[in-house]
Image 1 (cartoon, rainbow, N blue to C red):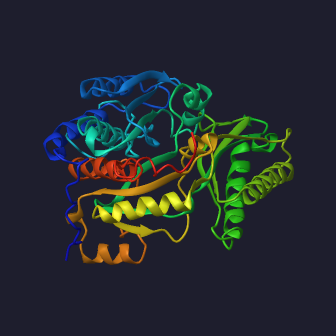
Image 2: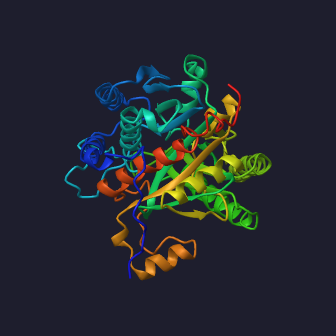
Amino acid sequence: MRPQLPTPPETPLTAGLAAHLPHWEDVYRDLHAHPELAFAEHRTAAAVVRELTAVGGWEVAEKVGGTGVVAVLRNGTGPVVWLRADLDALPVREETGLPYASVEAGLMHACGHDVHVAALLGACGQLAAHPDAWRGTAVAVFQPAEEVGRGARAMLDDGVLDRFPRPDVVLGQHVGPLPAGVVITRPGPVMAAADSVRVTLHGAGAHASAPHLAVDPVVMAACVILRLQTLSARLAPLTPSPLLTVGAMHAGTVPNVIPHTAELLCSLRTFDEATRQQVLTDLRRVVRAEADAQGAPRTPDVETYDSFPLTVNDPDATGRVLAALADAGTIGRALPAPLPASEDFGRFATAAGCPSVMYHFGGADPTDFDAEAVAALDRGALPPGTVMNHSPRYAPSDRHAVDAGVRHFLTTAGSWLSPDDGGAGDTATT
């Protein structure tokens, strides 16, 4: 048994899309093969500018917030809709075996941002080709540095709200390991806030043959890791539960030298500010107490960086998005709780004082999902063996993901830019 997904109906905005999809799939494959890290997306940004220029009609601005691109298409009176895609990749060594796998050593589009860019470019092409199908102003925002949580802030600091039409609504989408044709989202909090935390433990180095003369920061780090995992377990009854993960530990260079310091890199994900502050306070307390217990000569350094805000969907705008997607044949699933992943997308709408909606869409070939997988999805769970974003083996379907992404952007934007409501779709005053 395979999932029975309805065939998307043709709309005025999607007319002729099938003929152009091979080009946008080629763009996706090219972007996938040439990933770039945060604030280094020079080739990617140049490709965006080249494609928008070829489409025609769009006013294009480069180097917004460093390596970002903003494009504006004005089409009469109506609301201003921002559509956002992110540009950057991850420091991951690709293991997909795809013929268009990354040619950049140790870099990979493991989160699907290449799909986002290709899909938004495809939507830009359709909007330019069908001016009679919509009214208002579309703003395509190609944002750098999402993976480090600093790209949206960089664009805001560069005056993106003053230099371009201010949004009435901001829409964003993220591809994931669901069947193409499925979208998940929820009103209210939809993605966690996140903080990266760097812990530097200070010991006293010595020869490995004389550990009695050392204060060993490697042992200290091991004890801190176990205590932090205990702390994380004790927070599990909170709903939604905060997540605290130690993702990296760095110490020493050779086996016969006890180093002076050890560094831990932690990821904290929370769903409200009070819990965030509580966990950060508890983390500092645990780290300092363990260092004191082992006789550390200096108090540990605890630094937060690369922070992401809580992503919150406007309820009314979310209802409009889900209704439009349902009318377009998309299967919408309401999340029972926010996702523990994080985004900096919400900074745009917060700064503009307007609604925003982030939704996640399937980028996998629906025929890859058997009856067991479909049953898991119906329970709100991912099937066993699902390859998640950020994995070196994660790879959306080039054909299905790009097609779905273009259609979803057009559907959601079109629910505000309809030529039939005379601008009544505005949700804020500009």
